[in-house]
Length: 403
Ligand SMILES: [Zn+2]
Image (cartoon, rainbow, N blue to C red; front, side):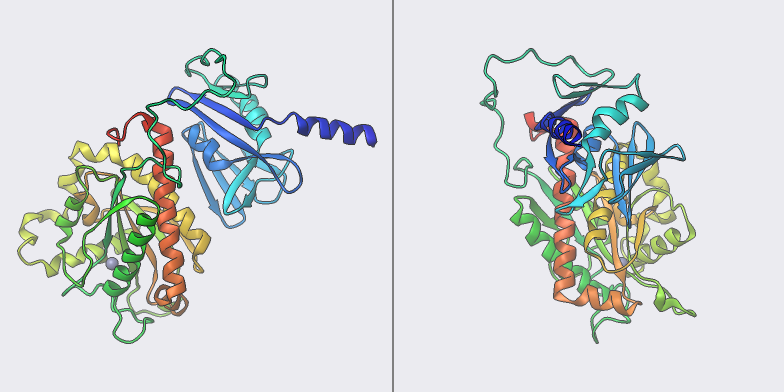
């Protein structure tokens, strides 16, 4: 028993303080922290982000895509599920400080074992490398290399200065959006999207990100014009909306949040939401003629859109994950639909439906100052996390031009 304990302590003592992950896209250093039970852990988004995969926490499960393969981790349970098999882990995946952590073993043993041709772990260098990654740089004579003189200073949030995003509070002016069945008397969708949009702006500015609003007052901006607010120098476009259902038996039961990125609608419900939001076009009498055929066909021919689809999907996943941490309603997932407001943005663009005004609990949450603040913080944190991941993936530490 004592020998076993000593061995365990020794093993822990050998956990590196950080590992590096090398891929063809660059090299990332990831801190190793000690979990409550003493096991070495790494941040899932840092690890999986460096490997070009995705992370999603849904209820008791974390779903992770690495090497285009899905893994599932039961939070707090020391095993993972892959290929329909449950396998043991040295420690459980768990949420610490609102961040998902995986046992270090997943990076140092599981991935190199499952994908032997793709990943290799070198314990001496504490380096996980992907096939095709450049060889490690020769060891520097100085133990800790000083920061390169031309490294731009980072903000406290970890991202580079100089980012700008566009926030689009849905509807406005003569277009009230949905009537807000369970909102306080006289409050409509356009009021709540503006309140939350302004809070997101404040939270982003606090994090060092510049914000351009499509509107800051109760005015109508044509759907086809909103995307133009995000072109040169804009990193991403976030449209904020509140969902609702038409009156039919049981319609007040549906609640929760979903995040859309632009593509042809995949489901009937996604088509319904897109129709509802696109319906604002009827308030814009002069602009209707400019976009015949409802919008999507002209834009799907636009090659510029494709390069932003993947980024939009990653941004949507990040936003949905963060909303899940604060929202009292159901996580309805990341979805695709043909929102006209997203078609004209020249950058990654998403639309968040933050809840249902036709549900009493969502209605209260969306109009309470605590609920609005929590949503705004979650959205701002998601944007910063996405920008951080984007910088890491693209190695844009060298230049803010490469956004
Ligand atoms: Zn709306």
